[in-house]
Image 1 (cartoon, helix red, strand yellow):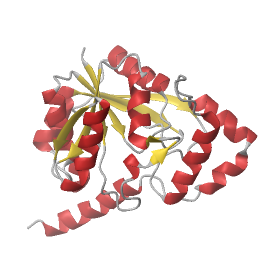
Image 2: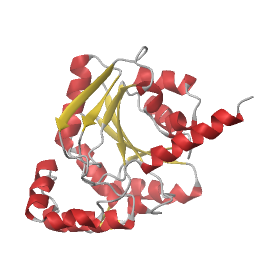
Image 3: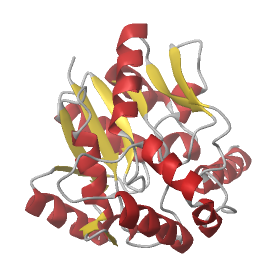
Image 4: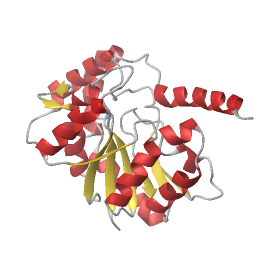
Length: 256
């Protein structure tokens, strides 16, 4: 099975423009994400999927300089971007990664891929009460292809998973429940205060050339320095998806 990790990245974030190339411990955020995904043993290839918008020329330039495969597609139809990238790289399974998760754990990626393969699922993701920023979902290329043909709602085109997740009658769903009681942790990059938090974490845990630190290392750090969590504790989780759901309502009202 050809397992391809596709990292979605764009420069035009509304809350923190250019975040994926912001410096973190001396390297762009995207460089950390790529490095971490490459440490996942069950991933055969890593592709950065960005848009054809001129604002994302910088992402393509970074990928070229860093020797990272890059696919450019629709800015807003992320489902189409994933489908096209998966076809181009002959993926059997797609690991969806977002470029604003520089603290993702390669070992967790491997666990989710293993669960996906063992269960014969159409999609399988990290589920339950886990820190925001460890997100990882694996999709069968066939499921992405069907969603690409059939999905209509803005939330189903702007995000990869909703159409598949909303139709359990067609798609076999798996879940890896690894954490409980940690949903209040926020390790993603969406706001300036997230950047402060991640800078604090990376300054303490990241060492150039060393294996990536894992989720257990971050949790141990926060147990020692719980004050770090106050830097970004009150920010809404999954704000982008919530915005898409509002667009769904407008889509429904616009139908004849």
